[in-house]
Length: 336
Ligand SMILES: [Zn+2]
Image 1 (cartoon, helix red, strand yellow):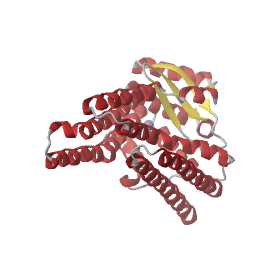
Image 2 (tube, rainbow, N blue to C red; image 1 turned 60 degrees about the vertical axis):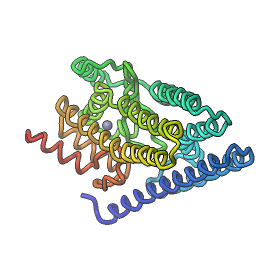
Image 3 (cartoon, helix red, strand yellow; image 1 turned 120 degrees about the vertical axis):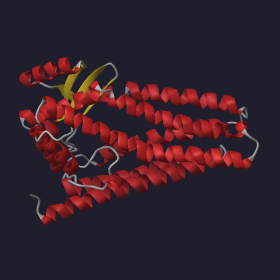
């Protein structure tokens, strides 16, 4: 059981990290919006670029201070600065689209086609995963033969091709995590900070969880739906003027587009992500052990200094650990 002091520490760490994240995203959105409405003013673009770099530097500094103070990580500021560049993934498409929209071509349909091709390209890049080569360079193949042969056996049962199981070096950043990536065949990654802290059965249960994600194509479905929502919303925006000359109708269409965006991104996708996590937990545990997965989840929580229970509002991707432990326990009793 955790004592009061460490519970408090976890709570403050959690709030701090989320606040930094929210403030960074909101500031980046504001800066990007200013660039968008500037109507291709080069000076505003340059100022926005420096503002983006400035915001990311401050954000990275606050994250690195928080990580040092609460989790005593070894990684320095530079690591967190490069990490913060991943925020740009959301804003570069946004800025490029605005550039196309503002670029003087007044044929609405043609403009929409440009942006649709561009969105499709982003989806292809996301599915192909540009980070894979980086992760491969930072990792080594799993050496434990017995574990590997059990993973191979499970992959046959699940009818999923596993190209490699790799242990990625995240000791300096102290991240305890596992994930999978691929289209037809999959790589499973587990961080050494997690792998070395789990028992044999716990590692197997965590890897089985990732293999269920792979066998059910969870990641591909989420990425495609996410992109699909943006596709619909952006097209309604771009084509609204061609549907009708009436301002009321155009406004109505824009309200519909914004509602789809809000419901899709903040309600539907998080719901689907949590559903997929539960599926991976439950099926993974059926093939391995619910107890081992429960122990692994609690260790992951401790290693990452994650709270056992959090509101759904804070948790877009996973059910909290208490919820997961609860349904895994009911699985043991044959209730789930
Ligand atoms: Zn998962």
